[in-house]
Image 1 (cartoon, rainbow, N blue to C red):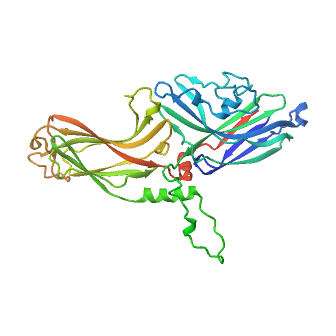
Image 2: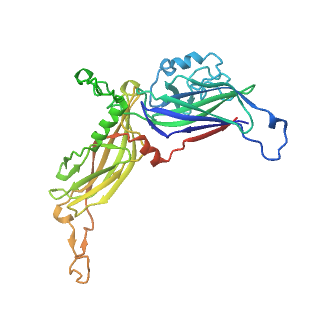
Image 3: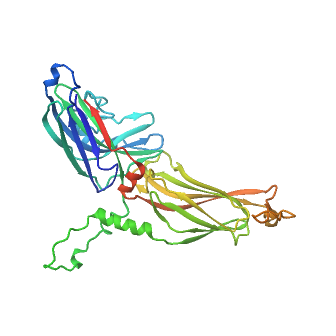
Length: 417
């Protein structure tokens, strides 16, 4: 028996970042007192290879994908051949244990979803003909730069993108075994444009007496821009009204947030002529399928709710709310299939009665022994109506080190062959 152990430096990466993984192969020592002819024999592995794939699953009831575009060049190359290592189709074209052709490259439709490979790195051979004595182990380091043009890890209602680092190995006269290591990848699409990250070398003065400094990578420049954009405090005020008049003045302190940030907003009812009884704020993601991939022209977007704040505000002059942005969600992005947006969904319950009849009234007579002051009582019944308002916001990734520590993702994976 040989143990295959894969250890990642962290569980979250940004596109363009270098992924590092330590692959250890170990031949465990026999237990004390065990007698067997295999105790003195060495284990032999024929080969081992590592590759990173990003697979896309789509809901066939909501997304229209042509059959010709469903297979990549790599899938077509191995669809009609018995390759020794083809992780791009082992989940649906070949069986992972025996390497036996299944549907020969046809897209798998498990339930109501179809899968295809959208990103595939070049395979790296770790070794050939590795021999391990009992108690001996070997460690190999795998490094790969994640493609900048790939989608992020995302699990939506219509589309799913998942990255996996696959370690494939085979013993002599044994079937191929695969160790799939999940990896979360985030992208910075808005800050990786070449026009934004232009170094302007012609305008940079040169000094031959100074030592050459290492140039910043596009990823480093994008991270600097991200820190500036998400740290700027730019207050914006919104007057929310309905057909009856002014409801509330809302103040948003920022419009761009990172994963793990708190969304803080204030509500001012002091100048309102429409009584607001209660309000609710929800952080929502809007999953829109691109027009050319929709099943129908009138297809609606898929909405998912996360953090929510609800408060009774009758009689209030001012109030505020705090919505935490979860660490596990996917920031805003777009691909040829989907466009993910974020928004704050407001629901205001307003009164249709005369404002004089719905204000809080003090109880008579007040209790002189009460340390809280006067006691107030709300109206017994109110005629109400509900209005909704959506405010678009931007969500961006946080530093991978912060996300890895906050989510405590598993970075140690094992396989015994």
